Length: 574
Image (tube, rainbow, N blue to C red; front, side, top):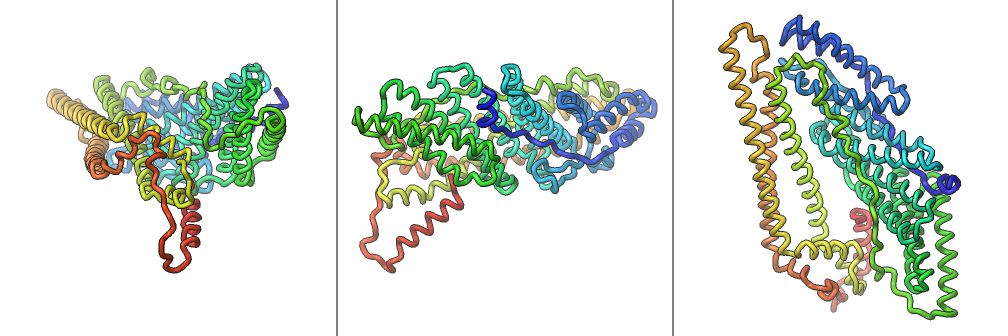
């Protein structure tokens, strides 16, 4: 196993983001003294010192990996406490002298600065995922305990990037942010970490001599996770951000494990004397590797060695199977494109890191905000996070619709029809089957009704949030009337101004989403006659065919088609 690990399983760890030193102590203490009292600033002295000490330790980044992981979790919880007590922005009445600066983990020459505590939290969550990946990579996977530690740590890394994507990225994004903490990058890194966690399971099933069918399913899922990461890497904004060797590594790993799945199932087919499909599967595996190796420039030598070793095993078994078929079985070999997709088995998932980062039991700065106000703000924050999460999911759905729109021009399919192809490409067939499983064109109407219901829920949450803020303002005014000058807390309008602004922003976003949904609904209705083809089974029976023009105008159709095909390959590789 040790030798196999050294030659096959080359994995990636993420470098942490770097930062510049900042002084948290003075701005926060000044805010407490100015908006509360000097006495309360003195009472908060221990907490202020603790926060500053944590930030200084993070700036040094010199601790052992496990200690650094614990520090990042502790500091994230402290930031969550500070978020509800210290409004940090460029507003006059806020903590307006704090500037958080972080460098991009993948482009260290680029940095961003924000007066936004969510930007700080995003960087910490990113570094938590990064250090978990480093812990995983440092584990000795040649031993059972080390393999288990690596698998668990990769899943925790995936959980950290998932938490970043779902809860923080949207709050920290903008023109003054960095790509590494974007929704797209966090999602890609989650899939990459899951791929490597699943890869650990693949190593385990090999060591345990599990049946070839199970090995194939596990390997197939490894390839799918890598494929999802690769799909994100070749789309904006990541396609211009990562080094080409990174993209080549992920692409080659995806091909390696798709081929590994074919190779393992071919072993089972050989035992079953199903030589025809065995040959087809081995040919498919060989084609995958040969195509991927063309784009593998710059990947590390051990990965190329592992791929070459797998390719040699595939070719050796293919030669043997072909000879046996020619001499004994004489079976017809099915075309590679006619083979059904191999099943996959996912054995990993993103770890739930929310509990580790939950600050509800933290006692820092507990005396600065009345308990009732803290609870109201916590409830508002939960609802706000839910609205953001829903909007992020909707953004992902709209991005997928945009990619579908590109395909509506039918240029890739038209070229296939011109060439006389009688079958759909695998990715199109899979999409058609997915639409048919969801009910065909009629399913679109159900999706639109679901979108309408989701929008209504979002609008109700926003109304409830605004009512909570109004109730808090009334309570503040009532207490001020009762106690007069003895009530030294900042006015509600000052503390909640940024919350009102953000609520107004979400209202505008919901309005824009409603308009977008209406446009999509009109598009579905307008194209309903055309989409009826999706009900055809098999779909290939309804494929149009193209012929060459009856009269050629300038004798250069072939050149035009060739140029068009080249452009499509360059601009739209999917």
